[in-house]
Length: 486
Image (cartoon, rainbow, N blue to C red; front, side, top):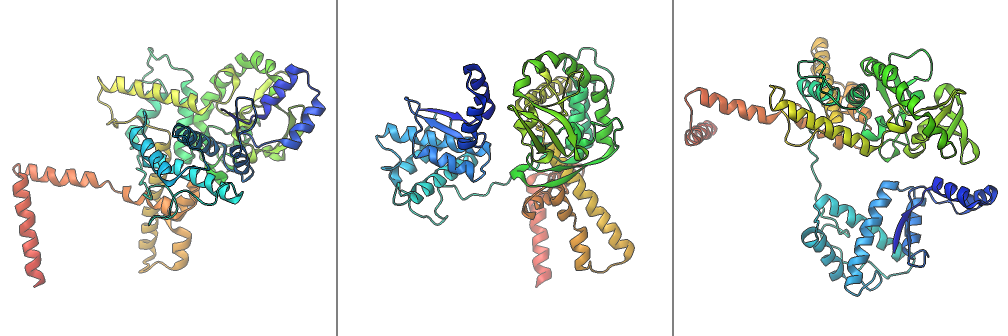
């Protein structure tokens, strides 16, 4: 069996090579078009494998994300391979088969997985069997309900660690790692990185907006008002298709983030675009060529796959954004904000390579220069989002306390709580669906490990107390407390 994923532009390219009539191809695509990213499982004779192909199609029609469908497809393929090796299939599989598949994935496979990954596999298998029950392929799920429900998942809620940066760490991260400067903020003549202005601007944008990587890395110039000659100092960006779960929200982009974009837009980006003209012209038929920007940058009208279409910018998915260019008359201008070689939007893997090169650079400098403390694991872009959330929460909390003190309010009113609650404000800014997701930042408002260090540092300063002395002291405190209670 072979697993493929639907890609519309690839069909157009094959049609061009084979000389298929475009009108006929358009009719076929409109009649049988699958959402982009839909898995397609074919047998050795290139026929769809059922009932899996029908399940994939239902997932796509239910607007399941392409990334989720890909994860589900690979999880089910592993289950099929495991069952086939035991002489079983989806219809004949027993509870023992499913349980042993879980044990194999978590304990005996060449590359075992932890609970969060298995929970994703379990979700895929559960949804598959729900579909098989719906269509009458099987009578029921092959496993019984447990105290944790009818799911194969672990039932354990993972506590995601919030890793954030202090100001010294961030400056080192942005300027030394990504910007090619020395720890003393001097120009490093030995730096051989690529596009430091772009990389520094991306860091600043991620930090000051709290956007996820799939949000800030897929921005288009008109969304920031940068297609006009006058550049705004601040702006708001409406997110939708590129946001997590496509949850719409508005993001404020402050002055500092816009100003740090200037060196990249003035120096580096024009050079990238100029070098990419030949490549872009050669790929002209595979691009979304915008001929007119409408509604103050909120709509594009242009040609895609031989058709003239109009698209709302916020509803454009990353794949379409990556191939969007503007026909200027003097050349093709990519509308993506951050560009890589060839004039295309930098991919997630491309940003990952930038991050690792920056990490290696920071590590090499830290070995012979007194810089900020480095974490054990490489910084990730999401740490910038955590830093934004935590700093905003601290600021809003202090502002709220100051306002309450100034107004001499003994107890906050319900309206004050609803409109000024820092957690609710941060929740809206980050686009969290549930307040519980934002609440996890509260525990990091003050680092408890620093308090532990300070406590033991005081003992050491008092004469180097041993653990026994500390224990005895704590016991005496408890005895005094019990005596006071009596």
